[in-house]
Length: 439
Image: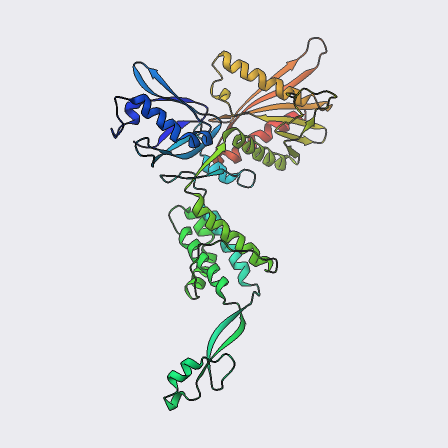
């Protein structure tokens, strides 16, 4: 069968018949085969946060899968012989492009890689062209750098030296024309040494990777001049193939250190694309929301603080007590404060549904963001809850007390969880917040 696939934070039931499409397991003892399947793949399911149980539904025995917060991919073993035969894939809940978003947020959130090798190619291939461009720029800078190392060369001279190859001279001196030809070894300082040849080989690999159809045409056009220059350089200089990581020495020039770092990243990228991986979907949305609000703050001339901590103290704290509260984002401009929390939940996809589970979940979200907001005495303050959505939505709410007359403004925002809508989201959120600043 093809890869087993399901969404995060969901459930799926697969019958034994479907799992045994190759008919290699004894259908007389399905429970035995299923239990062996669970045991063999315990590591993969634990890595992905997936719970698996044998169940019987409508007369069919099978496996009930319940996924958690992780999206990712890990290989599975067959109960027939224990060999890896397919991958278990946990996809995003709302159809977002995980690889695209993870690449956007690579400076703040990296996928977690396991030690299991995938059976099939993974969609979580972070765009390699970005690493190639970084290597091109680093190599271009390194070309201007003086990085000489001692190298040993063989040179024919008309006088002998302590390093003369006398064996070769004895074999060749029978010819009178070779009487004064001595092959001597010379130690010279040169930029054309073994380590530079290896870095030039990585340059050729980077160019080959960059020229694949996976690189957008617009990116190729922008870097054409630099890539053409480096292609000519790699074609006219010596190469020394290597797959080993480069060792970074303290005495290496800064440009060379940076070049080696980028080379190691490229080599590591090629290896990691076949490893099991996972990303916390809720954390990914939180980082995405922080990125968006940071862009909004830049446009408004405001500042943001991510994951600020409000400490909780006590003389005899219970073991289960919290040590701090941590709002996802604070946006501050002058005397205005907006406390923002990001939730990877389906509320903004179901604004017309009156379901108890949605109400209970929203009550927790609302209590949480209002608690965060209570820590600031600013007169002009707001709270905001961000949810994923298929289009931008903004729903203003007001929570007021009949006893104290205190009113709290809360805005529910639906964010399209993809990089294509960033500019539109930033503009609309900026307009929403700007209007509240002047209230």
